[in-house]
Image 1 (tube, rainbow, N blue to C red):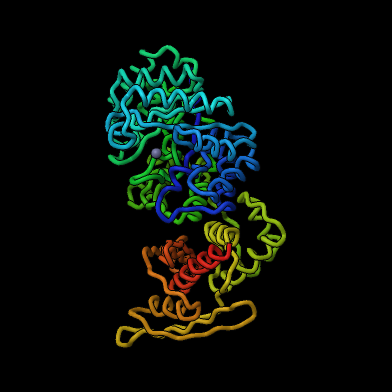
Image 2: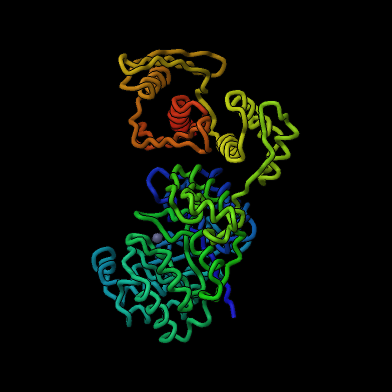
Length: 504
Ligand SMILES: [Zn+2]
C-alpha cells in the first residue's frame, strides 16, 4: 500500500539563506505562486523575525498564495513566535515552525543551557505557539547528533504540548543513510505518540547524502520531507525536491510512497528559482541539469533512436521539458508569440506581453529562430525586472589580442542619453568600467557566470553577476546573443538593483 509523503518546501527560507540569493517581496510571491502550482504541501515562506522586509514578504505570501500550508520559522522564544504569527496568520492554513537545539553541543555551546531547562523551553514555546495556531511544527535541531534517549523525551514533551509535526533534522549533514533510517525507525518504535503526528525529516548535503538520507527516512516511516528546488540551501544545500520526488515516482515498488507534486512543473520551477535567486544549476545536476537528458555517445544515441527506454529512465516531458517544433522568427507576429507563451504556461497582462514582444523582436532580429528555451529566458527576464534607474541603450567595443580593449557604452536616464568610454583588461572589463563611470558608483565583481542557454553557435548567452556595491552584494542578469552585451546588461542590472534598493 502506497503512502502519501508530504512535501515541505523550504526554498524560500533555507534556500534564501544562500549568500546573494535574497529575494524581495515580489520575487518571493512569484516563486511561492509557482510552488503552489507545483503542488507542494507546505511552503516555508521565511524567517519573519530576521528583518521587517522579511516579515512583509512572508505576510504577502500568506495572504495571497492559496493551496499549500504556509509556514513561518521561529526560534523557541516568545518574541520570534509573535512575529512569525503576525506573518502567517492570514494564510488559508497557517503553520508555526519552532526550533531548538537538541544535541549537547548545541545546548552547551550555542544555547548555554542544560538538557532539562532546554526541554522546558521547548514545551513552553510549543504551548505558546499553540495559543495562536492549531498547526505547530517542532524541530529538534541537530537531531542526528543528539543523545537518543534525550531526543525521545523532547519529542514526547513537544507532542504533549501540542506539536502536530515533529521534525528530526540532520542539520549539519553528518548522517549516513542506514544510520539515519534506523534513527527514524527507532523513534517510531520508541514513541507511540508519533503515530498521531506528522514525522518530518530535513537533511543537508554536506556529505552529498541529503537525498539518500531523506529517502532512507521515508522507507523507515517518515511522512514529510523538507527540501528545496535545485537542492539550494545553507552550505552544501538541502535535499533536492525534484530528486526525492522523481525517485518515488520512478521506483514506486521500492518506496511504496508517492507525492502530490505535478512533476511537469519541475523544470519551470527550477529555472525560475535559479534565475530569481541567481544560483546557476550545475549541468550534470540530476533531473534539472542541462545535460540530464542529453545523450552524447554514439552507442547511446543509437539506442535512444531505436527505443528511448534503452538509456532513458525518465521521460523529459514528465518533468516539463518539452520539445516544440513550431519555429518562431522575427516575422511570427504577436498572435503566434501569444499562442506559444500560453502553451508554455505563461499568463501575461497586456503591458507585460508588450515588453516581452519588444524584447522578442529585438532578439529575433539578430537570431534567426527563437527556441522555446530562448523564449523562457526572455519572459523570465522581462517579468523579473527591477525599476531601471539607468537603462541600456547601445555599446561599441574595440578589442583584439594586440590592443588595449576600449568600450563605449550609452545608457538612458529618463530621456537623457549618457555616453562614456573606458579601457579595461578585456572587453567586458572595459564595458563594466564605462558603466561605473556613467552611474557614478564603483562596484566589485564577486562572481561572474556566462553560459549559453540554448544550443548552437547563435545561442542566447546569459550572464549572471554578483557585484559588491556599498555594503551589500547585488545580483544581476543579462541576456543577449552577444556575450559582451549580455555581461554589460547583467552588470547594469546589478546597479539598478542597488539603486532600486537605496530608493525603497
Ligand atoms: Zn536547514
